[in-house]
Amino acid sequence: MNYEDAVAAVEKQLAKIDDLPGGDSLVLVSEHTIERPFGWVFFYTSRLYRDTRDIKYALAGNAPLIVNRSSGEVVPTGTAQLLEHY
Image (cartoon, rainbow, N blue to C red; front, side):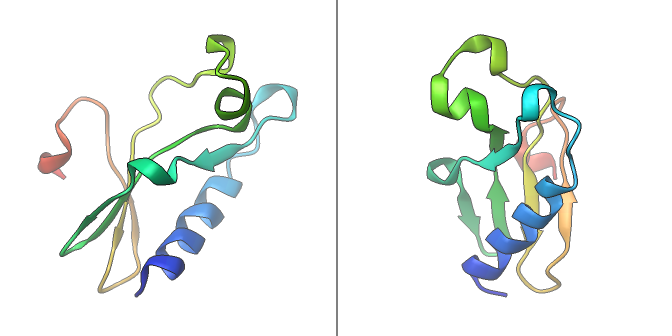
């Protein structure tokens, strides 16, 4: 799997979450993506927060997603452990 395919897989996963208030949606924060031999770690936020930087649109508990380079699997992480745990 290449980076572009990984981005598409994560965006597809994020699009499934459609219960945000005010017509908001989830978007990748590409500048924070981490590439590792196993794949990529993707971070995301709400579109409204990204566009306005207004704290009222900020998310809490939005754990990063890992994409496995070999399998293409999108793996949710958590917020209680360091990324290295996953």
